[in-house]
Length: 258
Image (tube, rainbow, N blue to C red; front, side, top):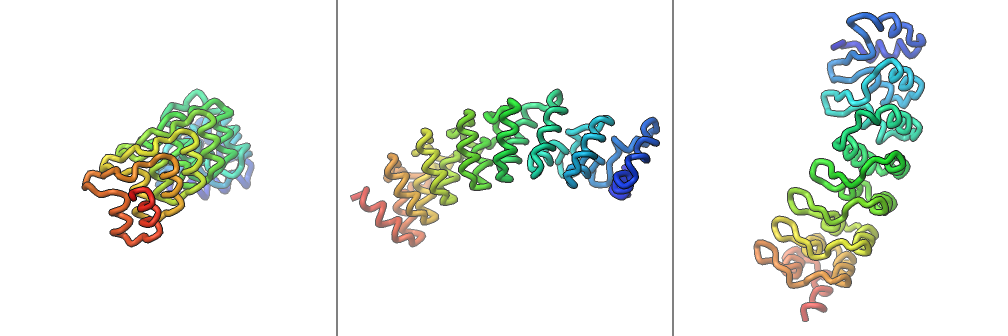
């Protein structure tokens, strides 16, 4: 560990990497060194989006999957980088060491960041978007950016939409909870299971009613949502809408109940 590694990196950039070359055969090889946060020269180059430095360091033997103290590696940084050429380059140089876990991690990171071109780049390089990341489908991760185009792209390449996480929550459930009308409509058009419930028996209709998302409620009902479905506490969408004072939702549900 080298405490002042970032300043050494900045000096190396200014001086044309001479200091790195001088230590290549030394036990203190700077290409593999890290600072107190676990960041390497390659991390710094990614933070700066310095493609020249990235190429130099990769050619010098830098490892693109070196995790820092926050469990972030250079390739993951590239997946949320605004410079698509950096991501293309690093993927091409790293394919031999990209595991299924890393594939999923890259998709999740790019999707959460709302970077359509980055997601497309991963797909174009034959990475698999069907693998969940931390027990969440990649479509679920994409919902965090509220980017419908990314959700559509992932589904086009076969990303599952009915897979649930350890709490039994599906992408449709999450979209309904967040009031993401266009994404909810798209997921339903792709065959999302409208009455699939979470581990506590909560359906997309129930959670949308809890939060007062009346347009989501209308859409779910139109697509066959069961208005009489009871959760584990024997509560329904209507009982929750009444409890939380969502009058418009109550009126909408009553047109079905009655």
